[in-house]
Length: 413
Image 1 (tube, rainbow, N blue to C red):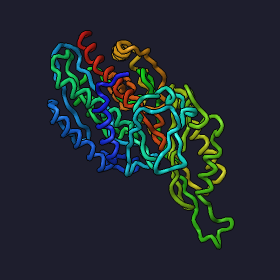
Image 2 (image 1 turned 180 degrees about the vertical axis):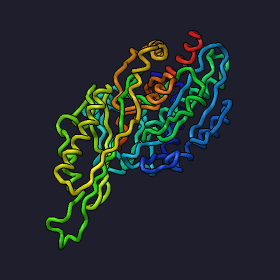
Image 3 (image 1 turned 120 degrees about the vertical axis):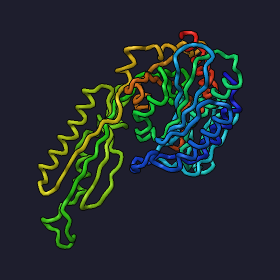
Image 4 (image 1 turned 120 degrees about the horizontal axis):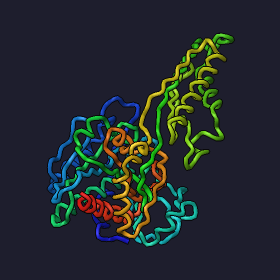
């Protein structure tokens, strides 16, 4: 159990998590929320204070910096995102540290009914004696991905204060809007100038992930026929009823997030907005293979077409847009970054674990844009909800692995 970075990591995560930086998929701006700049500007300031070079906040909302190298080798990027998920309350986060966790149930001061139990979450049972950080019960914690931010900042400060440690040039990037799939545009690979990179956005200790979902987003718009309800017989077409019928017609038992796991994909209705005259239903489509993703899109289209035939007076449209693709398609052609990550993990007694990510990371887009970017663990668990937690010692181990990875990249250069 690594302890030399625990105080710094605890301080950083507690400070960062208390800052509201939630993204908003309905906002057209970039970043999607102004509050993300609170984190971005803080990190820009802190990077300058610890002596990083070429620190900048770009016009597209990414903080970039350089840790100058002292040996030849590839330029290696390290990334984490500053936004927190829009699926749950992230305002007024109150992080708390449970020192020397005793292995029992964890309760929450702001919601006495909420319980985090090792019997329900076995990974927690492995962390007896660790320092556990949670929120207070009414919000998510935001360790996704402020744990990653804290790890990268701790690594950067250590390298800058210990110039005798051999490593090639490192590039740091803190991105916005990862949670809504808009964290990486084509400008970032150009400006980051890394040969390959790593996102610090994974879970269990030892995870070195190089496979993610492929993802599309869909918007179904249903326009009904509006009329005064007192005179609506055989005239009104209620868009709410049609939207409910659409969701119920799609496979419920085999193709939703709550009924799938491992390599199974899904169709997920994320939100419905509108009224009886018009409804908009947002979906995300996920699969590890492109033919499976295409099949899910076709199923959604066919279901919309059948619904349209059942009620010709309505107007139903289905628009599907690509979001990101499985990074395995590129990384399997050159596993060098993955193997370096595995070697760095083994240097700390860890057996690397590579499981498919049932989601995506900024690395999915970066890899697609030509910067191979696998994902490294941070320790964060139960993300996007009030039971989110992370072990400070897991974060410290991730910091050690990143430092070893930087050194091994220089050795292999």
